Length: 165
Image (cartoon, rainbow, N blue to C red; front, top):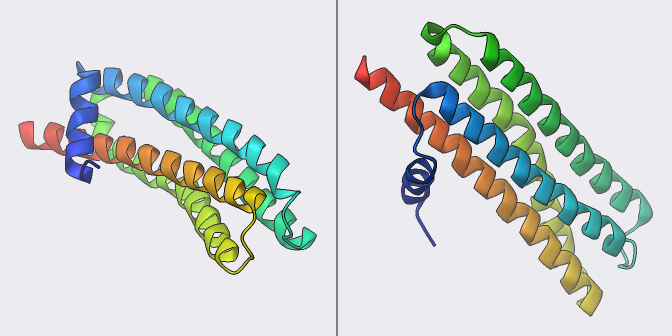
């Protein structure tokens, strides 16, 4: 497993940004792709969670919380890309701060709900279906971690821009 710094460096080397707008175009596409992966996994998760013995009100609460996080993530990513297209190059530092804050917030929602589910599953009797749901939950957590790596890469790149001035 790569450390966070190694993962950030690897990501930046992989996309080789040619400036801030190029980086953000890559980041936008990569985050959307990961969010689509998360959404697909969540669809499987929703189907499977109905078969385990989690009280309906708790299952509904978790599903609603995760769906809310997915929806907010999509809204934030699309709004930030619209803003990026209209900003002056001199405002990139300010915009980057807003980006990091605004993207981390819905990711935190997703991470929080999947962590709560992990804790909830720990108290349940083991079954093959529960194991499948746990696996899907872990996949969702891993996807959020990859999204955080991309956001960290943006922060690292912003620091690089700042240090060059």
